[in-house]
Length: 121
Image 1: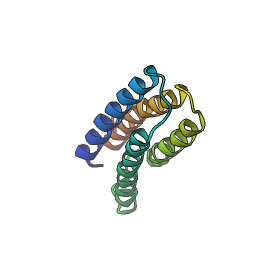
Image 2: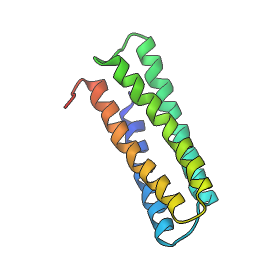
Image 3: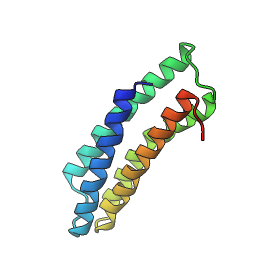
Image 4: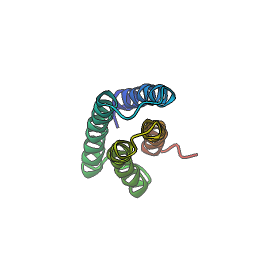
């Protein structure tokens, strides 16, 4: 795992979550800016997943490899599902759904780092 990429994903996701909450409070529907933010977040998560899988294949396996792969898969499906759901919900609850997804990503990325370092709670 690359700590800098994980940190950027956590910070970016939290910033996007704040923007989503602001849009929801303003009673606006999902817009292009939020959709672009989710797409950018997805690109970063795909890069992280690619690096993680490459390291596992290369022999640098964490203690709980199956859990690690599960979390990687989970992180890459959350933004597209959130975007699809948020676009379908044309009220303030669309951005609220995206905000919940963006708050879930830092938790999952942090857990990925714990698993990789072997420091399970």
